[in-house]
Length: 330
Image (cartoon, rainbow, N blue to C red; front, top):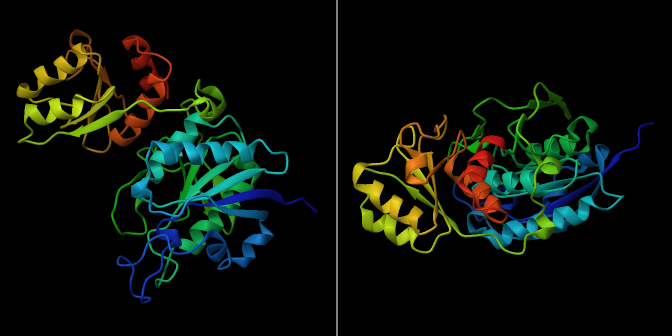
């Protein structure tokens, strides 16, 4: 008989811990009402997959998560993974910023043990809720040896996504999560099936360790639109160490915004061109002369995750060439 894995299940709140007044409430409900023990009680058959130990770390919607929350989650997961009696971890999380937390863990955890971040688009009280199955599948993935060494994962709608790629692309549908290059695999009948592996460096192959991060630099995001005025750019850039400019198309910058962004760069703010489109590549020295302006380009990362990566990079270096290499490596 194969010995079952020991999996830590951490509750942080979110829709997966939500409760509606009626079974028909799939979008209108109270978030973060249930504890992780209550949620696990809806899937008693998960005990056949692994030996489970549950704890409630936070109890709030992920739209409220700050850098301090990221560090708290990262440090707790890191501590658990360091224990010999823990083989992996599952984090029940709100879907709003699940991709940011997962990417942060993907870059800062120093363990090959499986880590799965999971949420739901409908609360457990709703008809056709995805909460129970998503959590069951997440436990199945975390407990399976094929999940070792491939970084932090996000499980949703029977799909397994790498934390680097996955984004939430819909506000209410069950199939809200997507990766531009497709999922790594699927969960079928309580068992993961993988068809590809992450190609970018993660976990043990990154220079960042969550246990050594006391504070994260301030990095803000500016979303480009037709009537965006220089004063708005200047106001946001005034207090930032880094700035992700989510430009139109291929990270394009309107002519009247070039000088405010160049001024920010001259003051030492690290300006990174990204795209508001949600996918595709922003090429360094492509749509703009980045080297001349002392700007960076995001490669293929979305603005919200580019912010996570730049925060981490700025904890170790400020050299423009080195920072650009970070975007092309991770």
